[in-house]
Length: 509
Image (cartoon, rainbow, N blue to C red):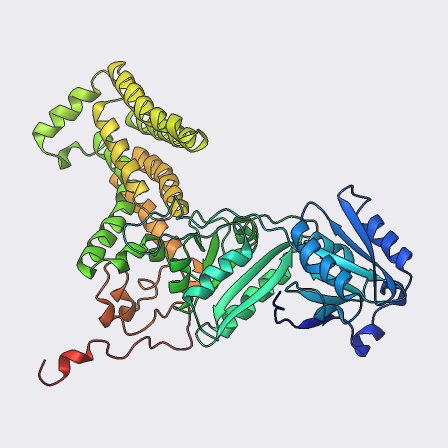
């Protein structure tokens, strides 16, 4: 068997640190007392296991939690080498990747709960932590909520190490920094934040560390929960961090000077600082030719106004402003509304709520049943509700177009936020018509201009106006014209490329 190269890392064992630690917190040389302490600290859990052996002519105990450790690793890489060799240095005897020395009691239960094996030795005040984690992860698959046509079809999984591996494969850069933290006093959830040292703004990294230092909670299970603790404006309907499960998207954001945050147990990554327009960008924009990418980018941005304002526009026209539509269309709309007993606002609210109910039901149900519900439910309810004269035909068309426009957004959080914004816009249109819609949109623009993502302007490059950043906002210019990085993250190195099409200037071409 080949021995893997490893380093032994000591935890809190230097003399200066030990002087500041009370003697009662240090591990004793009494093997039985140490064993009793570990067993009691884990509330005498029944998956606590131990094995006895002799090594270096001393009695030794291997203790671990059988539910989160790999039995084959313990048997073949730890126990078998120690029995065959019978003496020597621990780090040179076992074949596991991670060997640590622990001399404080408080670190013992945490090491066990992390899936490690503890080696207790008679008359020794140091306990070894040996990595033997049980790793059962699903295979890498494309995220179902971020499908693309061209490009990588890999997605993050629930294992933090696997996700970091997917990023490392794409960013072979010595300046890629990975910093680990543990959050949650009860769950001890592992998280990591990543950035490229010579690109990311150092002040941004310091700000993240400052905000994380205030997160003192007992339970964190996903980046979505952590987002609520560290975002700038928790009452805003707009997401201020980009949530993605795509490693290729994370890679591009890292190379723009942004920071990425990952949590163990979740396939989602948080990217910040971010702008409003980043939520309407897709990897397909850059994998296709720039004409195609620009066209679909423009369609997605147009969908924002359709999803948020089309029901409100219909209500304003029907209630106040018939004169803005052709006369023939007035008679058509008037005919569909003649037998409807409720005002247009109630029609719109009713259909929007039914749409949300159908969407939620389709998400919760198994796939085949969800498809049946979507088709049958939509057709049956839509037909029946029109024949019963509860809503008009025109309202069905308006709500259907609104739903389609909201589903165009590549990010589900932004799509939901846009649909929610439609409700106050409908109310303003129902009371004041076009004037109410105008005031509502002005208020919305003011809010977007004031919003920040980790101190960076959320509505950039419109507010503040940055003309150089327009090359990748409403449309995408050719990649060879995008020679600089966006200025919003405050990157240290703004230049991205020199002249990748310089071959055109060579003589003879």
